[in-house]
Image (cartoon, rainbow, N blue to C red; front, side, top):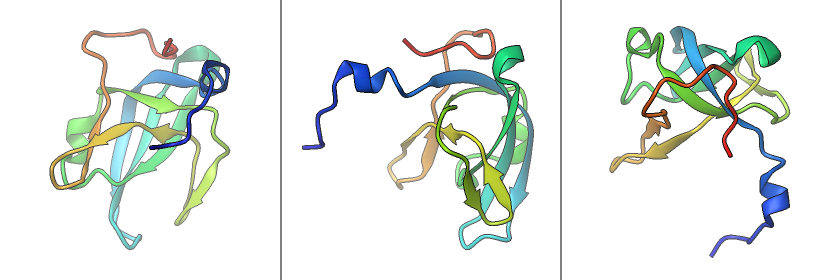
Length: 113
């Protein structure tokens, strides 16, 4: 079993919805990824992320898709890119990521509660 955290600790994780406005493959890494630009609304702005999504997604299919991401992690160097947010996903049966998406359109920047 994983470590148990308090609700107060969970509240420190800022999970927001954003719309992917740009996506292109990055084949310069050991495992190919897609570089995403995600619009999280006026307050947070546009953020970049690198996600290993090539098994289940093509870049052009991701444009205008709303996804969930952690927006308050410390930026991380991934290859030649600084990833500013962590895109959230669940594994498929091959352990490849499937993006976490809202069922309805949510204003960009909407916070998970």
